[in-house]
Length: 609
Image 1 (cartoon, rainbow, N blue to C red):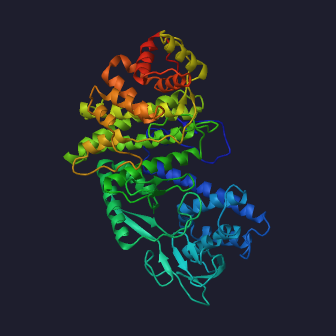
Image 2: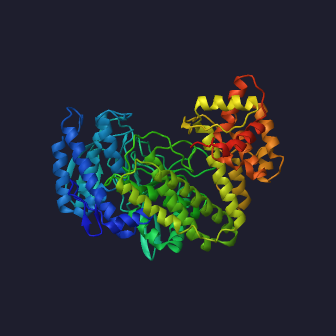
Image 3: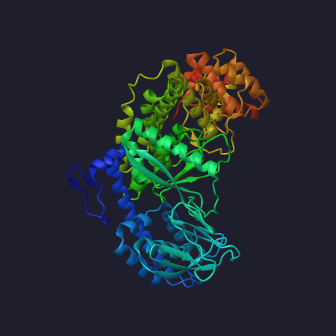
């Protein structure tokens, strides 16, 4: 990597990352020039993946089944690259082609499977050749595989051939400015307008907007089988009303982003190529995703408004940028064990996942910071809450990352850049004190609940504490740190944080959390800072002494009622574990007394890690 005018020792890569680009990315940014650089590196990667795939096909007898050989593919793609290098480059960078390349290689190495024969996935290369020849103005006659009686031509459209076999083949004839499927039978092909439909043809639609006066177009992909991030999907055509809503949201989102953050808007305009509409598992939340194989793609369910789509695009574009950087540099070396707390996830995360999440939320926090002053007055309280919460959560994640020895030298430099950007918001006083306190409560609520669910104190220490409690002794024995023992079946309510969002929402309801449940009487008491809240949670625990949500609420309620109980927040997993041990030994104990006893003994050295 090139930094400060110097270079590290030579390596196999032909790409050297300018230090300014690296530092800009580390700060959560990356302007149009940086995005162009990342696109160039992704193009190199796609070329290498294409070569690897075609070499693997050539070494696998029968891999292409009834389709033309790899030799014809080489000839067509080489000629297309020579005649129209820019068009070829854009085609190869089309996000679903990246997904297809990865999926094809995984099928050949038996690490992925497909519903159809192997040649239906690998033979998609002939559809790629058809589009490459069309864009280069080259004649071509070839054979392509059918999937469910249809064939997808990347960045062009879907030809449907009724009555044909599900996993059959079709002939393709490419002529100047024209592509025909089954030219000697039922001829179908793209209409004059690229995103229009025709008999037997489904065009790939576009979304349009303007950023700093320049037009921006991205594909609204609902037909390409490789538009998802894993296994191929059947087409799921959006109706006209849905397309209209997507256009309205997209135009509004990019317009909003351009107004509050022109540099980010220009970067998104330079890097985003496809937006794939997905059906949410719940109509109450926006789902989104992105992947390293699909640079320039965002998958999302329809958001309720442009601001939510803008946040979603920023979120996934952060992942896109970091994914491209990770194709060039190693930022962490880790076994992939899920062991870290990520404030925006309910499950433990590996080091790489935590880094990705922290980087995404650095961008989200930046968005809310810039939106604070531009938001309509009624929307400023929720924007202040999201900014204050994102700031705290990202700082929590960076604190965990700093302590992990798995970060490389490049990774630590990257982390310093993230931390510097985050520190710029530390003195931001635009958040009302009461809203800032709500954000602190929400962050503490999640962190406490995560520890109670996923951290397990050492059994010997728990037994020693239980014996001390039963004997009436002080809880001052030192104990070791807890181990991560994921409990992925433990439910979460998220009710208290959702209640905060509802209270701040004003005229526009927030997007609810699909896992949120209604507030219990104990939750209502806690949110209202009623001193009876600990008693209410104790009653819940009498019904279910293992309930993680009730233990979380009890710890928060005790701390709210008495600052002397604050040490419980360092080890909130201890009260439930000790109470469980006491029950196993036949000793009746009030969970409130156990928790207060542990808090009192914290100064004696039982905090651990």
